[in-house]
Amino acid sequence: MKAHQDSMFNFQQLNYKMLIAASMLLFAVIVYIDRSSVNDNLVIVQSGYWTSFGLATIWGIINYISHIQYNVTSAIRHGDIEEYVDKMKLSIEEAQELKTYLADYASDLVIQHHLSEKDARSRAMNEFNIKEIHQLMKDKNLFTFMKHTYLLGYAAVFAALFLLLSVISSYVGWSTTMVSIISMLIIYTFGFIGMFILYKFLDAIFRKKLYGDEE
Image 1 (spheres, one colour):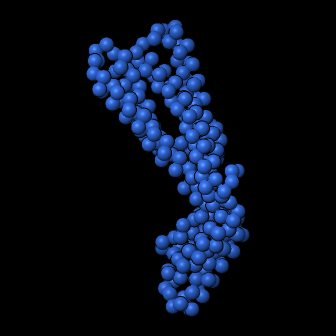
Image 2 (tube, one colour):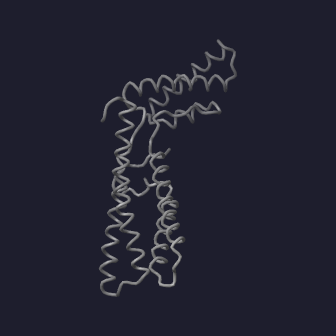
Image 3 (cartoon, one colour):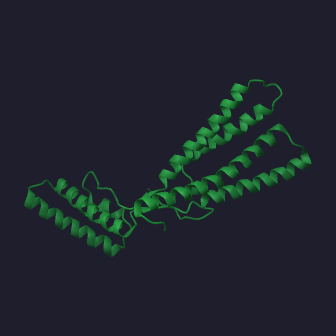
């Protein structure tokens, strides 16, 4: 997983943008329909609201999961030591030393256990992974939890848009379309803030479960 710099206005950190965008669009459309005098079908309106909230909930879950970084590179299926090491955050010198170590160890495994070169390289990487996992668990660094401040960034942008559109509407009039957009901005501003609080709460729980204390 590619990690992005953790900052409030780094909007690349939000994953599955199409899903949350669909939730927002559906909510705005349902607000428009709800306020329309030609609509009397409450079933459609209620179903639309619940669907938009359901999409937002699903997004919140998978977005959170996607940001939990597992600090161990998985073994490369094809036994590619070069690719395996290159995915690690190592200096050039450290990477070269590790590549040499793994290649030498794999060569020993070929001789000692009569393995194919591919199987030997895979086994060498797997054994190195086990050692790395044990060290990361000892250092309480097996998983990296983000700060999630990008959610506050989205909330700030949505709040600014809400204020801007409110000022515009106070001069040009409150059309149904404008009210629908503003309502969506308000709801999802609080939604992003609430998601930030929930994410931090979940981080604390997982740290407690994993490490026995809170960081």
